[in-house]
Amino acid sequence: MNRKRIAGVIMTLALLAATVAGCGSNSDSEAAGEREKTIVSFGGGPSGGTFYSIAIGVSELVNKVVPTLKASSESTGGGVENLTLLAREEIDFGIVSLESLYESAHGLGEYADSEIDYSGITIMGPGQYGSTGVHVNAASDAYAIEDLKGKRVALGPAGSSGAIMWERMFELHGLSAKNGDFTPEWLSYTDAVASLTDGLVDAICMPVITNGVKYSSGVQLTSSIDVRIFTTTQEKMDEYLTKYPMYMGSTISAGLYDFIEEDLPSMGFVSLFAARGGIDEGIVYEIAKTIFENSEEFKKCHDVASMYCDPAQIKTIYETIDVPINEGALRYYKEAGMIE
Image 1 (cartoon, rainbow, N blue to C red):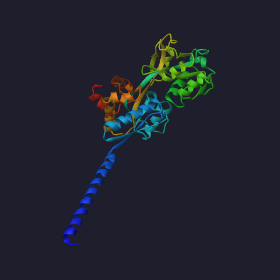
Image 2: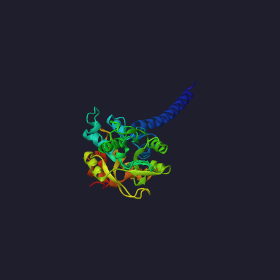
Image 3: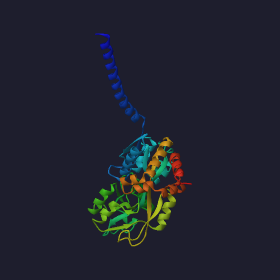
Image 4: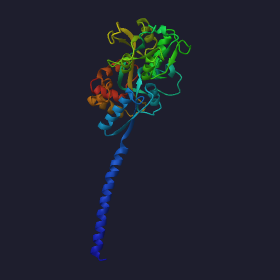
């Protein structure tokens, strides 16, 4: 082979090598870009539920808007489990109930002797809220909590914040499931509605109104049978809030349903978005900023999503809840003028 042919072959091989290297470089670059992203996870609730839909909405928004983060949503048991997952650093963010967050932060209730350290968990942002009540068939002889003695009562899913809240309220009225004063049924609200309709339970303790609208399971129930809703007295409500300051009082307004003829003092439930201890404050800053500055996009994920990006809630949380807001989120809220 003469020198010119040898030179030509060498040139061709060199160009091929450069081309292959260039293609590999682009692929490697994309892979490196994925590897450089920080992975964050959001704990929601059971698949198909509101919390899960919100977690999906946030993760999809983060993936769309923040190039440095790769987000995923996790199906979990809900607010109480999310708190434990946060403490164990198995998720980075999670929707939790205010009362569980408060008790875990202060070592109260079931968290008093816990071996799990909840102390680093902070608030990232607001969540949803509403009022809850006891639902019975209108033909029932139960008109107050005391009347449920000896009856079958659906309190909610086992271990859920709603079930715990109602167990405490029943105890204040002298009824204890542990003592056999009534029979608790640990059912999802969907199953509870079916059970009350079929006469398999005597009462359901569940939300009446969430974020200003009738709770969907309640609407389903009232479309199936005639219903009566009752709560407690204002005196008992005041006693309850004194004993359990992590809860909030609320009112179910007369006229919400045709059969509610007067305002009913109620227990308010509040959920919040929390961040695990030790998470980079810069990441929390970006998440809070992404939710609030892309709120119109975020609201499309669920009817209640607007509550998770409500600026008015930020000030309320800052001024009234004795659990710290994460410093990263706090920095954004101050920059945005939500907190002075």
